[in-house]
Amino acid sequence: MLTDGQIRQFRADGYLVFEALIQGERLAYYKQVFDELVAEGRKLTEQVPHWTLELDEHGKPRAGLLHKIQGVCVVDARVLELAREPAILDRLAVLIGENENIDVFGTKFFPKLPNGGTSTSWHQDNFYFGTDTDRIISCGIYLEDSDVDNGCLRVVPGSHRIGEIVEHRRNPSRHGSWTEVDESRAVDLVIPAGTVVLFSANLLHGAYDNHSNRTRYSTAWHYLPEELNPEKFPKGIYEDRHVAY
Image (cartoon, rainbow, N blue to C red; front, side, top):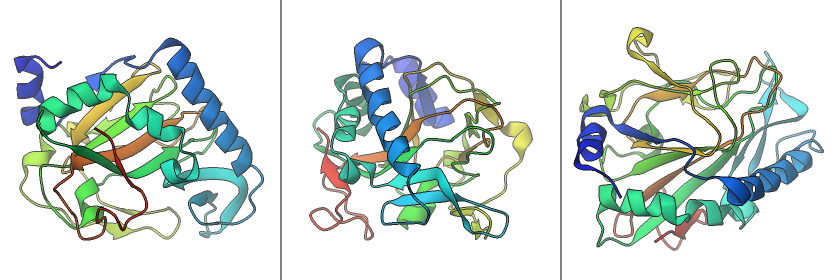
């Protein structure tokens, strides 16, 4: 499912973009699932397990403004269908190993609501996993057109090869811990709805905030060989780890 050129590109740049890989009725189906989750999020006035709200400048939750669902495949099993889409797994298997059983873990949904919705700043996923293995492949799926205005993904090509997990610092007014990069090297991924991006968990990446009047629904999760057992996400114990392939 991948050409030799794509495999070389992944090794060199640390990511591959598959534009409009999910289309038609399947894309519409998943979009409806996430519409329903956003509607549930509008009812929230405070953080609850799995669900986080956007923060104000003082770090306080903003009622009804959903930031993220962490463990979205636990919250709604229909989302696991998206993580198991054959078009994704067939490509992924080439990168992880076609004879490997593959799990998916750390499933997230970012609605990135209009006029201020956030998802992530610059980071490496492996910082959160406590490892620097190159056998974890992250996946972003964009259910809607994604551009600079509504908060597209940004990557630093080749940064997965720097050989270290850089320092990350927590920002009280945002969720998560982030780092800084030389943004002159960053690439903005302006992509159509249904696009899938596979990238190394060591790659430096982030996203713009949403300054438009449109949503930008996306998912983010991570694939790994079944045999790999990061300390924080052990198979059979961590509830948001699932068989993918």
